[in-house]
Length: 503
Image 1 (tube, rainbow, N blue to C red):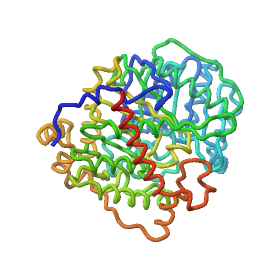
Image 2: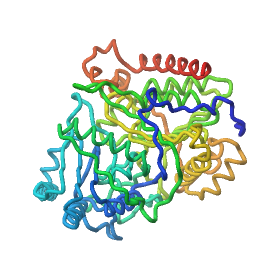
Image 3: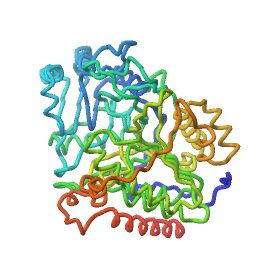
Image 4: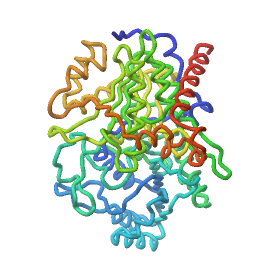
């Protein structure tokens, strides 16, 4: 069904600074990190090596967690770890910016409140809350920068209920909340990088800090090697694009780079797009996918996501919209090339997918904080990083991108990457390879698209809890909704296809 020959269009870079991304910068090293057990280990090593500044910009942050739990889920808490860092090197600044929503609960937890008070009395630690956004928005970026030369950007918060290994076993005793209660398996992905790519993320982080606190953070660059000794290196001397979302607020203009690059990815795909994401509720994105499915030889689009959203409110807002959009896409999918899967453990427990990953034709990789919902396209602050092999510096990156795709899919199927690679080579189809390998035990389930109830359907159709701009909360119902976004998505995809043909 899919052959290896690529049309000339694939040689054109998808990313373009100033249009669908902010900047494109060179990194000497970069790697995708799968699941928080490895990420927390690497970021802890990088923090220990920091000389001048540790900058953390996040949606959530919890002082009570441990970055490297022992076999019983115990270990040095993050709060005590930072106090130790401050004691060992008082000149090393630790700056933490957390989204302000939920700040009150920090002070309602005795352990967390006491730790924040201790931090407050520590000169080297500055913990702030970010409320620089319109009502209803959230600050959703997950960025860490060490001395402006090593950085992390992706989907993993340094918070509770995130730590897990790629094995996603049913009863891992290390997977515990701060109160000792177990939590379900959790899948996530982030990217680590250094060089000028990291420096660009430092610029972004300092800019966010200034808007949120009205305080300038001066550059704090140090030229020591901060790359963790045991961290893999997937990419060398690679150009990395940075794409953002941000609502218009006060002196800041709206930014919709992530939505633009998503529509360009969908328009440019020849063979497949492999997606891991928490949500699928953007009408524009879904309409673009449906439009591709109507073609004579459409690409395969495979989405791995949770069975249900995390939390009652999210389920009301997101699950019903996903069902309606997926059913609409399915009507256009004559050849069966669109699939939504849910990963489960050996014992059949759902693995919650929090990752935000896209791999297109093994020539483009996108990892970040943005979900495929309306909020991440225009309402919340987001940041994604992208490696596009069509950029001249990235000519040798396709093998590493393909290897990441193989590792992710094989992890979910409970097979070795070699097994999946062999079946993919045999069939030439991601869908057929997955269908041949999925079964009992640790595997991928097809998502059951149950029809939502009347209330959930009304909420979904009118995007009551998932608008794509601050005004969406107040707009009358006849001026917004899923159908309108759908029409806009079809038109925007057509415009992008025309623009690519004219380049």
